[in-house]
Image (cartoon, rainbow, N blue to C red; front, side, top):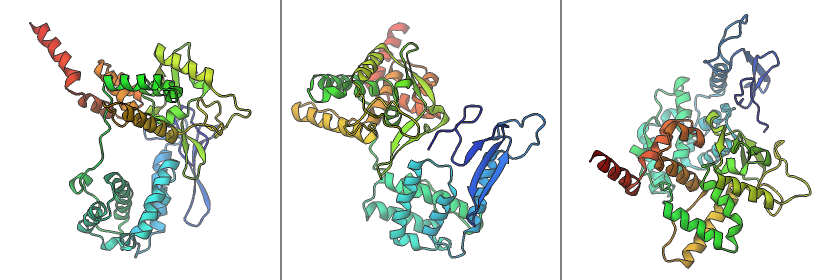
Length: 398
């Protein structure tokens, strides 16, 4: 899917376009399978209607109304939980392909589970909670998987409530009040662990080939999909910046595609330290020169290619980290914890917080949409991180 932006540089969702005269258009398929279009001079409620043009609802508000109407027209009185989830996901036309794949997983599970055949008007809040508890305690599903399932059913039932198909949303409760959260918190590496890992990689005959990539991930805070999507043109050594404006993904059927960053805040320029710049230059110097550059949705020049001369994706790097840590722990008594690309991102964020970087600046570098996410990093600092500061305050007060 090609990345489209409007004249203000904002990303456009699936079905949205902007015409040459500035007017926005949303194309969709109605309940009878016919292609329809709606238009507006504004994209969001914050936009001002151009001078001389008739004001009206923004395009995004029109889209919400269309989605509600589509749902209402295909909602039978005896609708089942599976039918509801299916109809709800069919109205979500603007989601990313990764989200759509998650919808498919949930639908496949509901199609096989007895709960999916229950009529929605018969489902009570007690039964919804009991079912989720059984998923965890009887069927052994992880909290994260149940969170995904409930993430579809809660808004689906909410839509059913708003359309008067049910009296009350049975999934309108906090999941953490019902289930045991077995999700393992991602811990940042300590400075000592980071140093030991990089030293091991640098001196290992096999894994030293991945040293620069590991170093870059630990010192830029890039999401792994952003890292995989980097191209030669994204690096500006004169300005010392990394342009982040896309993500490279690969679907379960091995199809490569480009997505826009998770949020508009994800589009940014990340500064390069001298050490990061040196790593990127070594990457470019050793980059394979394929006979035919791989092209994904019009993008080419990817920095990291696999043995098939295709761009490396997140799964590649997850395995490289996993195998490198496993080899280290077979050799040394003092083991390293699990290291993943996201642990690298969390480590970088914690490292910058430890050094006192302003939260607003760190939010920009990380591409967080909500500064609360950035602030959470500051709340995860440990004893060693604050001990020196406390002692410094004491000596200053004296």
